[in-house]
Length: 570
Image 1 (spheres, helix red, strand yellow):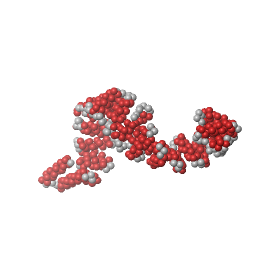
Image 2 (cartoon, helix red, strand yellow):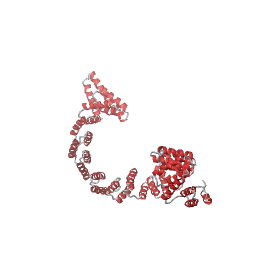
Image 3 (cartoon, rainbow, N blue to C red):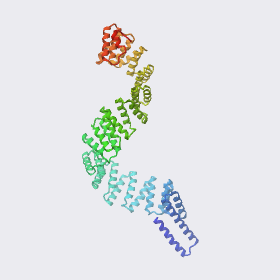
Image 4 (cartoon, rainbow, N blue to C red):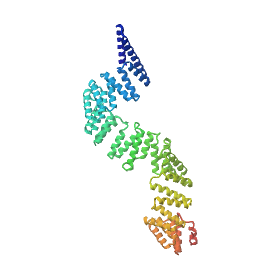
């Protein structure tokens, strides 16, 4: 602006001389044009500072019409055109201004910036070589120059410039940092380390640089040197936001779990460390715990989170988990509920709370909280499964079936789908809906034809219904081939043979049940008694029926009558 006013003052002086010398008409026109130029330039400056850029552009363009070599208007237009996205015109304007005033450093600096933006780095370097030659200690020039050299990967020239700068201005943290970065990029680890050591020597109480040096020592396996720096940082700045994390990692690397846990708790309690970072550290730390590398007092961890962040959910969730896995479901439930006060949509808290309610036989709330999980996380099959179990316990089989059918659609693994279908089969069994039960078995066997559990159950229920006994025997045979010593499968096979009237074979299989099962159930004794009765051994049949009564569990409704009358009822 001062430059423009100076031009205007000179023009006024010239105007006075011309007047005194009886100016010609042509001279009058020149004077009028220059006056118009100055007027539009002044308006342009005013509109620019009022951020009325389109009007400012108009005024500067008008100023140029009255004075074609108005480099000041060109300079202003180069900025405004760039802001308006008119890059080509912007570059043209600053190039013209720089050509008119080659010694104006502001013009040259902006022209260099445009060159760098256009990828013409050699033109930038040429301009800056001259700028730095005129002002060798100008740190801003050096920084801009170095940034371009780094962009084109001319590291040697950067080091050269930094050396010159250091000779001129002495020690400087910018120089140390740049050299360390460049040597690092070049893979010159020792030279990079030397620059960081110089930086720490220059600024010995700057904890940021101490931490940088410690990290460099760790990368070069100079762990003891790094440890001494960590201790110094802790002494200088006890609440440094990262020092506990650094020491935690250091102690873990040496297997000092007790010290590691101390630093872990200190990190949680550190008021300067962000909550989100603490959460990430917690997740990483407990992942290591799952690999049995570390023993953690979860109670202390939860309490530390609650002490430092009482309005955040994680501490309450951790304590909830602690009591959950200790089977204290009442206490766990209380902490999960508290966690939900601060994060009402937490998948972990809602899910674990639903499990707690199920363990406490609070099936209404099991249903309530699983439905909350389904509301927020509708693609999670486990929530549907637990929801169905809640409804089953409440004897609402229709809603249980709805949940299971929805949830199985979100299963990914075959084992998960089997769990759902087996649960569906169980509901149809409880509802005594044999048709749907067999349809479910068929669905399972379509995608898993060798599913032993389903084959066994299918065969057993067919035998109870006296239906398709040959099919049942074929299914049962597959289970015996797969697990020849499984008492449950042997019992099923014996019972199918019994229903087919093949009593001797049935007896043979039942004897294997008692051979392999040291704690036979009531139904096993009852089945053996029925088989023996059919074989004419009434005495031993009644004996086994009495054993069935004593063993208890699942037995037929006719057991008492069979014992009393010493006769078979079916």
